[in-house]
Image 1: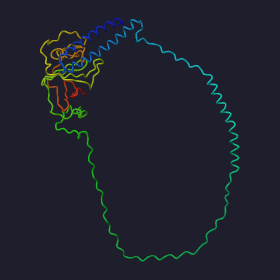
Image 2: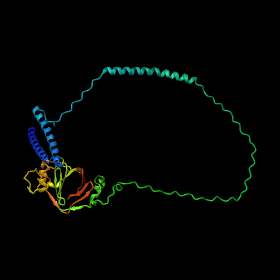
Image 3: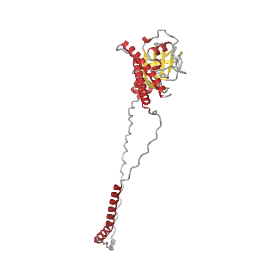
Image 4: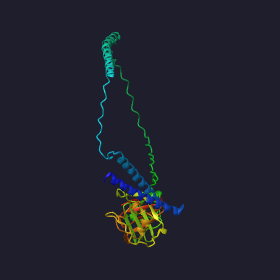
Length: 342
């Protein structure tokens, strides 16, 4: 793609983002002070995309007007200039070295003479060896008589007290700090153990949601549960890099967002290859409140999938844990953050 073609493409994207921002601002104005979080998220996302497009467009326009080469053209590194020799410093250093050498030549012989003179004047200790007189033999004193043995009773043995062991009280563990009357479901236990302080204790024994539906998108998932008719919007995939995420943001669609039954087969959008336009109730929510393909979710990467007997959910003090048809388990916290594991 040439620079002029890229500029034309960026101008189309710029107009599209501005239209989306205008539409979202009108929708938010109709809500007053009680504005839905998904609309705020999409508005922030559209503004960030518009800034990136405008920065790139400004850069390309300046390159075309000035005739500069593209910013990706490789450049050869400039050779580092050699520093000239400062001969004045070299001469000064040589002079200092000469003085030091001459001073050392004068000090060595004088130091040797001084050392000889000092040794000659030091007194030498004289050690005289004299014969040590031998001790004279004297008469040995008489040996004392051995004492007469008497019948002395042996001492009575006393019992030595045996030390007793006093066990230390056990150190409180994480399990003893947070004691719950209702246990988590077996499949949810590992994720709960790692995040128990954030989730709190279970408040029910869990349930199987049947039927349930889900759909995967470029930037996350939509999950619908039939028992509460609620939809979970979970941004667990990076829309740009397609990388799977195990933490991030989520929110729940309020019940007043219920589908009105219009356009059950979509509105005939044309997504890129291997991507899909969502249809039905999830498609209606995607078009009306989630910014369509320009929102954080983007296009669907597969069609809507409904199933029975696979989705499990359990409520906790500060959120819920659920598992859909996949092996991935989600902990949805009340602070709009999620944590997941496989």
